Length: 403
Length: 137
Image (cartoon, rainbow over all chains, first blue to last red; front, side, top):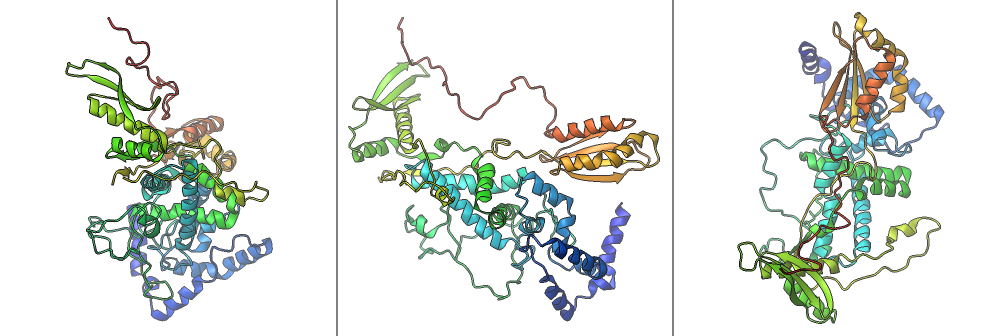
């Protein structure tokens, strides 16, 4: 087995075919790539037959000749890959999404800088769809959520860590190195060299003005304007050095490549199978994941926040009362404290001291307020379907308490 | 900042939305010469195409393994693999073994004492000694 592989490597390194990388030849091969792209999903029967006959007659040896020089697998290889077909079936992708496009989704920009053969455009569309669907779902289901928690919830559903976990759970394997001879069913990207410190330097070149003033306060409301859907800074678009878009891209981590795969699959489904299929894919693969929203809150001064909230909503001032206690003079006392506004109990908490129990009770009261959810939730994108009922405005809250 | 959001990751619930079959690849190894592979060769010739068509989500590889007993190997999404030796078995028995590998989750076999587990919190709540009709002694 080892000897076989050695022969294969040696042939690729030593043979005269592989070394003929002249400028003119490369130009010829690159123009040859444009013969077919993935965006032509359903050719007619006669077209298929014609293509096959030409492929079998003339272009097969040529294809073998150029395969190792291509940065990503050729389009024709998608039909021959068992891995790719299995992935298509495993994800229940609609049959209108062709294997060629799925193969294109698996090619990251770092593997193939050509925008006609990598997944950048599909991932861009898919990311917009994902963030649109998830943010409308969160905002309509929980209209009172504070903005920081909305950002955290969006991050939990479609953040890079979640998307990378999804790719792992889909059973997508990573190619060791991208290339034309690689199976198109593998995720292809150029890896960051091991030992590279990714978050070493501060982020520069964002869209936010005065980004070098690190001591200036960055309000959470300004993230709506300047930052992305998770509240992270957005990098300003750089003018491409090469107008054809084929300049080599920097290497990426496996997490980034996985993100672009999920987003690209979403975008590809939207393009090939339409809005309904994209929405179904979103519901089945992303919305069905479990997230406990009440664990996303991190209060620093819950008692003060609750007092301000009651003042804003014209409730009576909250009063903490002991409901029951045990072992006050022992080593492990337990206090059960309720917070009351007039006669209404807003929340209840248990703690080892009176202060702890009171703050827990305040947290429970605040969560009860912020996690309000209307009974019948409808999202704006549900009106896009033909024959849908007209849109009725949803409940809009004043927002979180500003302290 | 008075209130911060905590970043977490959503937990997958396979089967709540889409169900992803955990077996991603089945390798069939056979020997052309040895008698213990007779059933396996017949299985590969007659039943495997139908099995592959029924399970498009599994990648199937067939490769010879000369002078060895026939083996089916399942590769799973969690990274583990399971191998079943199918020497001297009939094609129907081999199909049963292939189905067994297909339906497995890839985890090590464990005795399940509590068949139902849930990440949802209890609807009823947990009994508390500090609530209700408290009696003092």
